[in-house]
Image 1 (cartoon, rainbow, N blue to C red):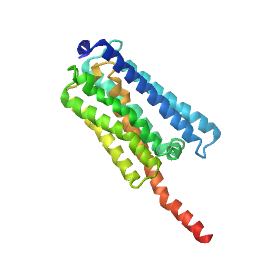
Image 2: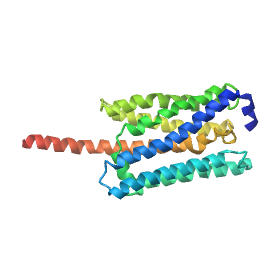
Image 3: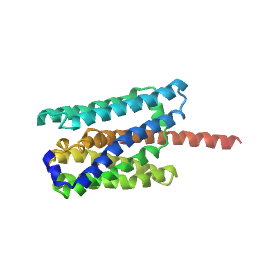
Length: 255
């Protein structure tokens, strides 16, 4: 499958590689920046507000670095079965650590709760780049259509609606919460369908570098992780609304 890249024009090969690397670096930087800004909105100690964003940035950068090493088959040769196992561990272990930290850490949870709801939605606009599965990779016969169409179109739709839903949430428009939850669930389903169809149709994405960074880091791992962080963030914000409304009403009655 690695040789199939020879059928891709050099300009497209370079441009898609640039997009993949650029988006991966963007996600590391964006999540770190969001954590840094949200930390300032919490009651955490000043030291924690400074240290935690650095920890998050180092964690994500290390994850990306390991994914880059494992995904490059020419410099990290492995048998097919071994590559699948190692790749699964690279994608899953950091993911589990990040989800556990969200619900167990006394710092990550408050930072997530303090994050403006729209931020964790808007950040997934990058998913529009998933259309590259259709063009150029399907167009030039590098991946099968049974994988490319649902993965590419699902990602593109998620990316297109991300800024729209984020704007609805930011403006607190009617039913914005329901739309945000529905969008998150759709985006998560898309990232579950993509690897499932890749396995079913034998789209050996793990053998195509740097496209391998998608299943190892940029695609389902970071994408689903961001959806989980967004859903928790939305749930906390929504649960606090009745209490806030009650306080305002009480204050108005007292006045």
